[in-house]
Length: 181
Length: 345
Ligand SMILES: [Zn+2]
Ligand SMILES: [Zn+2]
Image (cartoon, rainbow over all chains, first blue to last red; front, side, top):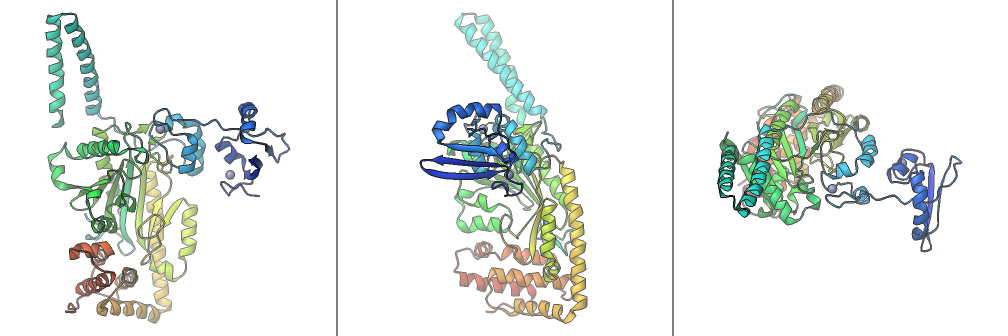
């Protein structure tokens, strides 16, 4: 029997789930099972203690004669930046933001291994623009100086405040005029 | 250089070459997860980054807001391959920056924030790549582009991650279609990880024997390697196509001449013509040119004609919406005008 997910490899994991009287069967290869988080490892055995009662009776065994591990509830990783879950990615095929790549890095590797020519970028690198880096550095400098300025004014250190104001003005000028080069 | 005006290398088989680069901004979610506000902000930043740093650039490029265009104008852009069908659909702040010579377009807020697209006539992937990466560098200089050391350029779909590059060529393959070899070739191409699609890309059927062939992989190989692999394969394909044309003409000369001349006759005389029919007849005409059976018209003129007779383009030229019948009449007239017969009325 072929794996119903990739339709390429032999199915080695047969899963049947009964939920509210309905039995759903799934036949997967180990690669796909691993990708969707149905890996028979210690962690999933542990998950199983909590997962089983929520999802009803389940049988999870491998054809290789390895003892059943029970159903594993995949831990659903969430991207902290955009809130997309790995499950949502799996069903839509689209990531939520560029930070999802860090959040799902481990789980994306097998995806790339399957659909891509490798798991590492070897092409052109991002142009590290000196202009942009310089600009950002100056912007953060200004933010620091502004904080110091506010503190100086609050502490009634007017001479120091005037000095800080000049410094800010000096840094700000090249940013405004920086577009023309 | 405009793909449908100029004559490029290997133009007897390769109509045009295209490079598409996908790029995204770090500070916004990908377009399918953006709200209107974010979509507008991202679009403003991208347009500003590309146009407002260079006086000449502002003059050479045009920015269009897809939402403000009517259906005809939007579809006319699709027919010229300047925007994708997805971008032409209603969406949040879909915009496009187009070079005046129409060789470069930057789609904004499609599946990725930025999709740079460069087209050249004939087989010229390097030329298209130089154009596209020049535009990319300019954007990289002025924007926070999403990139990681491990995965390269980060895109909404993992099938674009890495180089973010899709290199493709439009190949006219009547010889391989007629000899029935196309099936095996398409099959073996997909096994070699190239994608083959019809004239308008993604999922569409081949029209007029034109196929779009592109790289499928984007991660784990460099841009140069991907382009060279595609080019090497295309050169073989070009030879196969030429061989098939010669073989079928040698073995069945009357059949081939009859097919081409019948089509030529219909193109010259018809008073009403649907777009599909036109594309198929023009495919025969193109084959006739390559075999030296028809003279007095160039391949680039045929390309220009095809780019101007799509349902939307023909209405755009006309200046107002037309019924399908009116379009078919205008299309037949445009074809007759180009091929030399006097207009009907
Ligand atoms: Zn599988
Ligand atoms: Zn995210």
